[in-house]
Image (cartoon, rainbow, N blue to C red; front, side):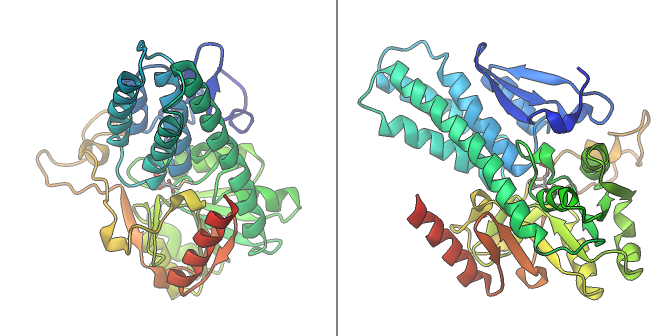
Length: 359
Ligand SMILES: CSC[C@@H](O)[C@@H](O)C(=O)COP(=O)(O)O
């Protein structure tokens, strides 16, 4: 399939065929290929293999995926429906541990099933369809709001550095860390964005540089070990990154290497902003020490990108997919309800309490 990535939703529902549709992100930037998924194993694999990735996109994919699966259950009674639902929910939840949006979306979908327990199966399936679409639409609206609050932290002509991909490919449409950039560009800010390539899976090079360049943003790709140099040169006014889970004290898990960027940014007095939909804030996790960090296959480091192995056979390899940035290194957490500032224990609680009141 051709076309522009910025014109296609990263995650969507094919209503006619009741299928979860995603852009296969492992094929980017070379090929824009859509996948149509209807089976639990296909959806699990798509999340695990990063065909769909980025915390918010994973959440939306899981919500639509659960509707797609539930619409195919061949059962007549509620107990059998609920048992099948719980089995698939647990299965999808096991695909990736760090991004809280996965379990958040799955819990929301389960809440719909239990709330409609007295209704017939088609009515429950309808309610699941509705909730999945609400979760998708919320993602679009929330990212736009993050863009509005984030843009206020930028000035025309600023240099911005980002790590991994918290762009439109990590959400349905605008991205989190890229939403302020896209909005600023609409307002003629003429920013300059540095994208860390983001080893080992190169989300910064393959995805962020691709989508920003396609959108006409002035973009420069750098290797991960170059961020200190561009900051020391004074080319970066702010770091904007996404997140996979924010603990109650503001400690933030994001793609491996984010904490290195934050430590370097402190050295050069560059503010680090975490763009976080409230669906990524986990008040049940007290600090970053309590966040489970996904460890992935050694082959991603040793074998993924060249025909031949890039490391000695049998060398020990450590491949954590995320790291935790200490809240002390974070200048602000940009949510759809405004920017939380230190002390985060108080500001995040106020934002989450306020959200609860609005529901
Ligand atoms: C808005 S997406 C935020 C994060 O999910 C993103 O920065 C990131 O770390 C993604 O990691 P990935 O392993 O590619 O899913």
